Image (cartoon, rainbow, N blue to C red; front, top):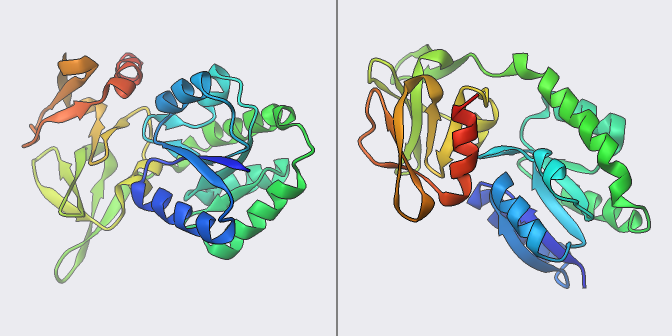
Length: 255
């Protein structure tokens, strides 16, 4: 039986992928769903390698390729991405399997067939290709979003990324809060906007919040290894960093 691991930080996307996989390959076993780099490193270090990993490139705590620097991944990988400016070129050059979000059933089946036809090749030989793609991503930093178009009732206007203190979700609506404490409704999912932000400036603290390092006043230890982040302007809710992401956050703050 083919064993699958899904590495994806958006629950709606992972749920949809699971549903399509059950339809296309009902005999496959989905072993676990992971949500970030640190969680993935911990899991791969302590569990048998699956046959195949569906791996989102931009996760809430970093680029997925950093996993390969910390643990020996022996599985085949199908990458998923919503950000095609670098991914298409890099993957086409290196002939690695990938899917663009939103994932379509037909494209998923094509990727599965490619995986099944490559079962006799060595996944570890692809490590150089992964590094080439990572270089392409790093060279693409100039493409990070610099402004967002906001749709008002009867008009449109821009807000600049450098002026956004944090993003948060409430009632399935994404808001951007600027330095003047004004709230703006953003027409993106939190996962998609996260992929378009410079990771040296923005950090996805949890499922519902992204923070700008320039507006963090301090962070504190919390229960069970978690952290609490405080912002200026202040956020009306407590912003928690999970134990699994605490080390990554501290490293990010120290850059």
